[in-house]
Image 1 (cartoon, rainbow, N blue to C red):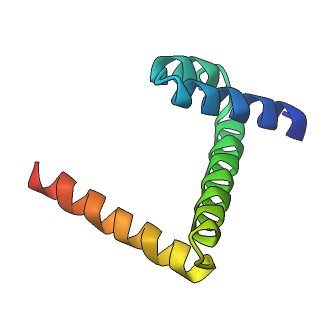
Image 2 (cartoon, rainbow, N blue to C red):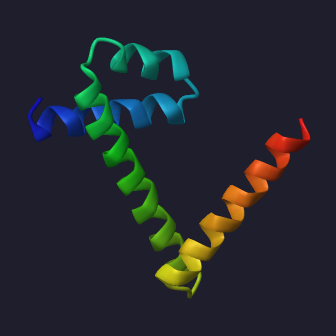
Length: 84
């Protein structure tokens, strides 16, 4: 799949996520070969990382603070998951 198609599908998946439509996102990914799904996952992760850095910078922070905040979120998520 060319970069354009990966980006187009990635944006459609983001739109589904914003709309709370996880089933729609699944249907977009279902017909794709695993390698394409992996490329899309990497693009989504890169988009999320960029958004975290921008949010940290907007709050007067930097990349290290964005990383620290993300690590804190991961630990909190794991703690909540372990409690269930």
